[in-house]
Amino acid sequence: MAKVKKAPRPKAETPKGFRDYFGAEVTERTHMLQKIAGVYHHYGFEALESSAVETVEALGKFLPDVDRPNEGVFAWQEFDENDKGAWMALRYDLTAPLARVYAQHRNELPTPYRRFAMGPVWRNEKPGPGRFRQFYQCDADTVGTASMAADAEICAMLSDTLETVGIPRGDYLVRVNNRKVMNGVLEVMGLGDDQAARDNVLRTIDKFDKVGEEGVRELLTKGRLDASGAFIDGVGLSEDQAEPVIAFLTSKAADVAKTFDNLRGAVGTSSVGAEGISELEQIAELLDAGGYGADRIEIDPSIVRGLGYYTGPVYEAELTFEIFDEKGRKRQFGSVAGGGRYDDLVKRFTGQAVPATGVSIGVDRLLAALREKGRLTSTSVGPVVVTVMDRDRMADYQAMVSELRNAGIRAEVYLGNPKNFGNQLKYADKRNSPVAVIEGGDEKDRGVVQIKDLILGAQIAESATLEEWKERPSQFEVPRDQLVAKVREILEGQAD
Image 1 (cartoon, rainbow, N blue to C red):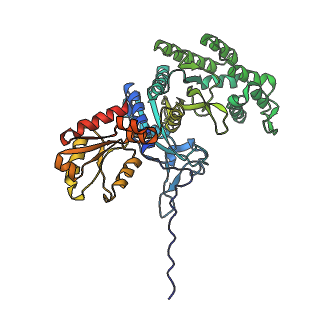
Image 2: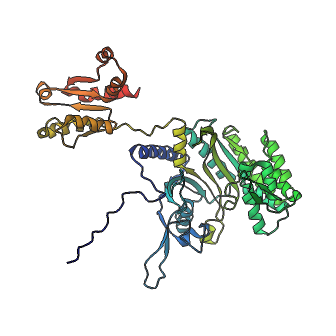
Image 3: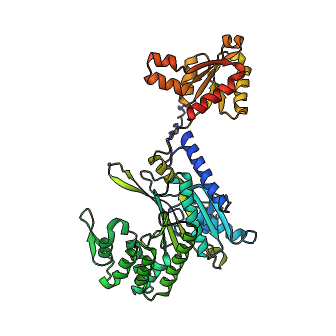
């Protein structure tokens, strides 16, 4: 009889580009999302939770490759005997689902509709250091108004959010630009309807922060040598054609009024460019009236994010403090949020123009920034552990933990094998527990409990002398009816 071949055991490993998050990290993210939601709610935005799965048709042209719906997203085709089942995909952002929701429910929703959404999104892209295929986003959007007040409000709310989560003023800037101004520049360059040339110019502009003014000029014209010595072909424009782009990118001045004057020079007689400048002026005026100065939000024409996606104002929140990279070199932390006006997204469903604007915060990057600033430690305080000295007295221990919980103190009874008491303390240490409660038979007979300050005990064990140990005991015997009061006293002392 042939021997039955056993199926191989599955490997216990996360899929490539994904990771697991444990207690402290999940708690940190939860607290941050609560703070962000608090700001959004304070501004009058309502929560929306939409499906994590959308049809590929609903995601539409904003997919990286419409003809191959599984390119860039995690997609699959529903089973159908005729192989005509609908293609479904995990959402790759929170904006495309909003467009579908608004188009589907617009008759029941208020106009404008102000919503915020939080949750994971998925990108089927090549992972890298700090770049995962699943990550959290936190969005706020206003749909149904073309007023620049909506854009100004989003920028103000973004500023308030950063400060609320722990990024102080001076460590960030919200930078604002406008796609229409760039369209005006393209117009005066004489590119007309040459979409390929326009796209090449936009891609080159996007490299401004890396190659600078001269690098952009070379890439727009004859080309340039990169840092490795390789030659990169230029777009092939003349020097005169490239000049409006340079004027646009370098138009930021110390005074915002001067910045607008420089922008007018860059767009020349373009009406769409003038419209974009007017919108920026409205935003600047509204922000100034709200008390948001240039130390928090500034007009900056060098911000060119998403110029192929946005239709008007664009904004980006950049953290300005320095960190050290993996090679020990100083660099700025960079962008943690961005957004803008996207007036064409809902139109795909309704056939009618529906103005919209919004922002997306990269929660994981924001958490990383707070860790860099030393405001997060990736450790969390565990529960008070009630140890078990006698397994026949579990009811007594359960009564203790219930008293602690009813008093608002996080607590648990040790549920492992109580035979080795040392293992119970090792468990408490692994849980990062602040306090252990001990009641053996002797303590029970005398009506007392032993309460061990595990944080102080660890500090004493690490460095204290015998005399210091005697002066600062880490274990206390108290009457049973003072259990809750003593535990609370120790916890309050640890928090100081």
